[in-house]
Structure formats: structure tokens, C-alpha cells
Length: 113
Length: 112
Image (cartoon, rainbow over all chains, first blue to last red; front, top):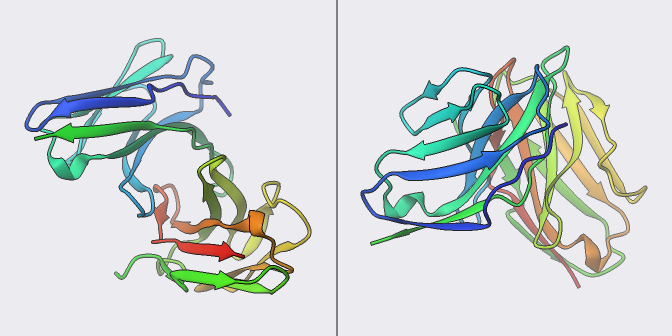
């Protein structure tokens, strides 16, 4: 599975957009990009995923570059409750729906009032 | 839906004792994962079950660790004998079909 590189930490002002980058230069054609976040002491929470097209849901937007070697998670209006560690991971579906993903160290996002 | 349920939420035990962690996946999900999280190693996948069958246990650290899934609604992770280096937060996650993984609240294990 492809490895990802993320900044260790980032700050964002409350109400502003948070843009979290991720490099995955060794991603293969059948691997998806997933984003999860982990708020202190809780289990990781799924945010969004995509293969090659940009994706948007009620939580965030995911922008994947055309060569798929990097992506950006966008939280459009960050709130204090978005303070968490954000994991960018790549994984793929095997037969039977097996999703092998490897969590890296993630980006610690601090939303500042 | 109550989500993934794990018990106990906290466990403190002495070195050498047997520890059993429990997980109830979301109803209808056919995949179950056990993870371990420590400050040093981050979040590691220990074992994956599909339709109650262990598919990938390459992350299980050693023979002291074992996992079972006797039916679609229950799984256990057992450590026997436990050691201080097993202290960590253990997460269970489930997945249905092609969907994302849903994680439980975790069990914080402390082995003294």
C-alpha cells in the first residue's frame, strides 16, 4: 500500500477554511484516498474518500490532483470542534470488500478562536 | 444504530494476567477490524475478519494475541499472558460492503 506524507501540525482560525495537504506519490491506480480524523480519545471518524475526481459531502471537500500524487482536504468553515488529528490514507478494495489501509501519523489541526 | 460497541472501556491488569477485549460490530456489517494505538507506533491494524473468517492476521504481534469472531455480532481479542508493553488503546471497527470503516470508542488497556 502507498505511503502518505502530511505536515505534523497546522493552525486555522475559527470560521476560516482549513486546507490540509497530503502527498501520496506512490499511489497506484486502484487505490483510493481516504480521510479520517480522530478527536482526542475517540475512535477515528470517516470524513471522505475519492479515487480521481473531486468529492464533496456535508463535512468536507476532497481535491485530488490530476496525477493523483497529492490531495487536499478542505474544511470550509472550521470550528473549534474540528480540532483533531487528520489522517490521510490510501487503500484499495480487494475481492470481498477488504479495505487494507495504513494509518500514518496524521496532521494535528488546531482551530484557534 | 448504536454504532460499534466495545467493552470494557478501561482495563487495568497485572502483568501475566489474561485480558479479553470485546466488540459488537454494527448490525449488517460483514467486515471487522482490530487496531492498536500507541504514542510510539500510532494506529496499527492487528487483524481483519470478513464474514466471521480471519483474512489477514499479519499485524498480530505474537502468539500471546488471539482473536475470534464466533458470529456476525461478536468478536474478542485476547492477550495471554499480558505484558506492560501491551498497554495501548485497542479499537474495533466494522464495515459493510464497500463502505468506510466505523470505529468504536476503544478500550484503554493498562498492564502494570
